[in-house]
Length: 128
Image 1: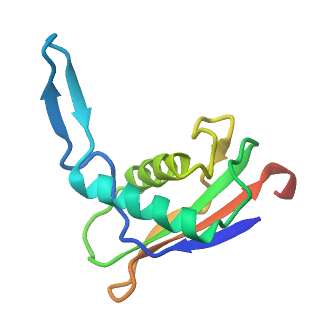
Image 2 (image 1 turned 180 degrees about the horizontal axis):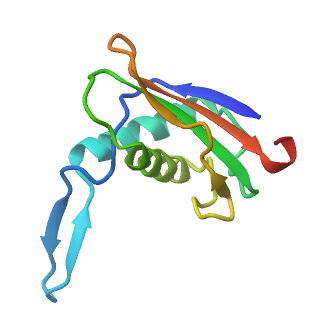
């Protein structure tokens, strides 16, 4: 089992995205500046702390506890998508497909106004 705490405010990927139309008429959905900053800070933390021998390419459960600073409605699945994508970018996981992250059991969103963060716990199927 691998445990680490990422000292960043949780973000979702889908809020405040930008829609850009290309010259050929196709449209792209680009992540928000807030998400890009979140992803950058997650990658910097992972690169500095090296919490695991990376990247993980075997089936595991990704359990995340998201501590947010404001008591508003939250989108757990949006937070999970954002952290999974950021962890792939940081090379913690080879990919976030269902052959590698097979479950997210135990993940939740809680309130901590003083210390927003993301607590990550990765357990492998042979440990479960």
